[in-house]
Length: 137
Image (cartoon, rainbow, N blue to C red; front, top):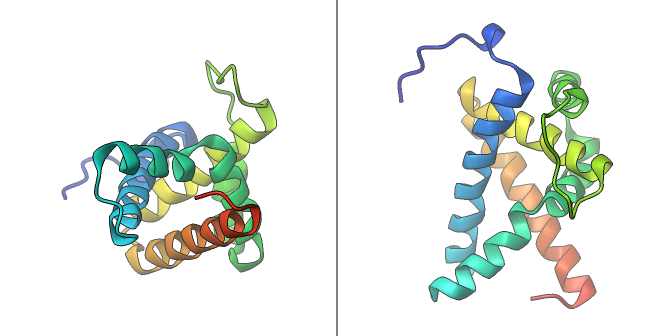
């Protein structure tokens, strides 16, 4: 896909905007790979991965494997003031989720697909393991 914009011209929130869409695709594909086929079940399960709380938790679980450059992207995304926040999500959780989305958007935009695949796979596996521990589907 052609990119007509430069990374240095894009705000962390714009990267998060892109990352949100990319993460949604990873989550939906993961749900299909789990063998979930009914649309209602797919939507319900995908929502578990793309919620702000899940993204914040994925970020916490991935922290040890991140590079300094990736941590910097997350920090800039997390610290960026958004015009709105979700009413049903704590501000800290929302900002962590924004940092996670900024990282996903950054890796996608810079063409670091192997690293993006690695981070997404680990995040999804960690969230699955956590759901197994809590007994959630």
